[in-house]
Image (cartoon, rainbow, N blue to C red; front, side, top):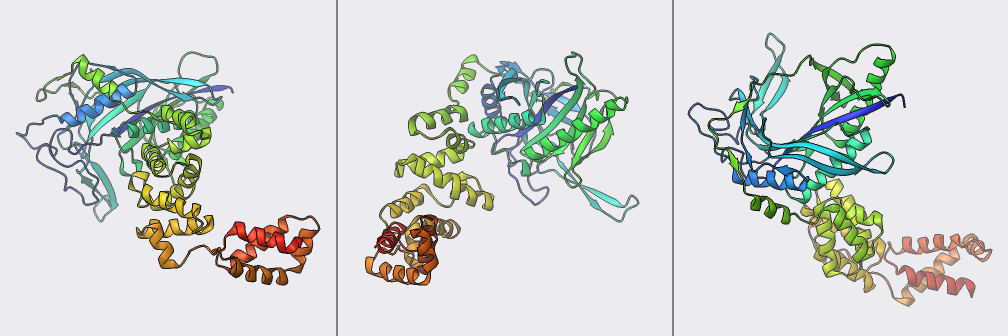
Length: 481
């Protein structure tokens, strides 16, 4: 390629704490505006913030999980700017001394080789409120409202070096980062609720050259797909600009999901002067080396290590292991099922197939699954005991998932017990043979697929409740004579 792509990401991750960073207001997502607020997070004069020790612990866990060097001494700064979403007129952040620095994550690049993405800094800060723009009848024709529920919510900002070389690499990095945050239970990373937000800086330079090109900043990307698509669009736009002989202008752009285009928000001629200085109302953060080591030792088994264990211990294919360990809750669900029904591949098939499909449709993660591991074990044991077949089992799982009933209860109430009575099935098989002479001749002529059609006719006649193995045996016996 004529141009080399250079991408750096700034990711804000909302910490999974009970309270906000400097007050006791709940850190929870609620649709009603301005209910999780108090004089501290609203910036009333005379209030005194106090740092949440829970938030500090979560930030420390994130820093060590991202292989960072942890500062034993750090402090908070005031980042001054005036905007309606920040009621104090400044944001409390860590500007000069971040909690973590010089970390890294390993991902696969476009060629499948390892790429070490440097994490320049991990710092704590409070979130701003949320502006809501709506049509109005004022002179400007529009109205802006602000919801301060999010103001003061604890965040960590994770900043990479310019180490990503394609939109796909950016997406892989975000997926890896999300996995680390979820495995450590630092954050739930729900992008739709704003608990993981990403800004991207992207520039182009001639392949083989050293100086970086002029970068633009992308905002308003609410999914990994949006990050990838917006970067692809911006790369094409910058390349076309350079090919025309024009210069790329330093700008902040937002991604429009409807038009699938980047739109200029504002120019960015020079860095904003936030007049940062140490916050005089907050004590410095002082950590001991033993605390850092304790946090490092307490890290859970991460996705890659867990996937390898699934391959080694459960003899699962690499693909299965990767899918099952993509989220900690799904991996936990799988292993909980295994404790009750020790057939790794069978359980894997059902979890990756039916369970994941129903969870996706319901917008749930495995930790919220109404079909418990005990239900999965009961369902699979009923298949083993020939009470139901695989087709009926899928129907049972769906009804149990939606109703909260146990699989056995569904089977009994819906009368879904498998038909394995020899004489009852024989009568149905005889009728199917009589009604389908062409398929019989095709089978006798060597077209074995015809047998599948005949089995299907028997299953249809029994509402899917026939024992398929017994149906196969009866058909073959009667056709072959």
